[in-house]
Amino acid sequence: MQNRVVRNTYALLAMTLLFSAGVATAAMALQAPSPGIIITLVGYFGLLYAVHKLQNSAWALPAVFALTGFMGYTLGPILTRYSGLPNGGEVIGMALGATGVTFLALSAYVLTTRKDFSFMGGFLFAGMVIALLAGIGAMVFEVPALGMAVSAMVALLSAGLILFETSRIVNGGESNYVLATVGLFVSLFNLFTSLLSLFGIGSNSD
Image 1 (cartoon, rainbow, N blue to C red):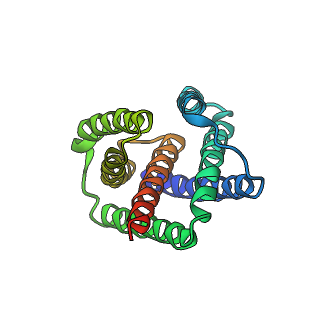
Image 2 (cartoon, rainbow, N blue to C red):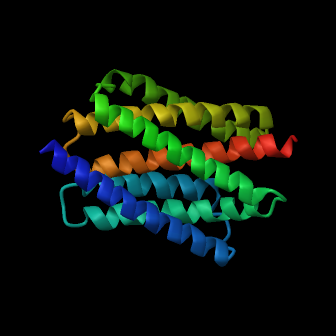
């Protein structure tokens, strides 16, 4: 049972990552404007709610692709901004590479050891709520130092969530591959964007 969940999760995760990357590339090519913080939050949480509501129906997969496609669209303007920097391509490449290596290393560790990280759930959820509120505060009040701290916090929390979510899949805590895929996708997305921000800040300070 769990082996099937693992296979289905990683197959769907690969498809959603490719789809999201395609949408982000199209958004960059079309110079699509940023949807703004309000539309981003409403769209993200609204589609996330839809995925959970439809998790056991035939509409679950369309909902997953709608969510990951929307997240890809929000990523497009961010990548456009970074690609306009003198070393923007290098920053994007480093963030992408670090995200991939981190995900593969953490996933391999859990899949090999089958260690249970479910005890981290409450701490990680609370941390993400604090990071979200602090991130909104950093944008509203334009505090770069707070923004950098939030990015570092989100990167660490995202790594923890990859451990947590993978262990749930492996040890039977999550039997729905749709929800498992969305959990890993969101963690990867947050890890990539936070590393992008950190590398971008570090690059600009050089």
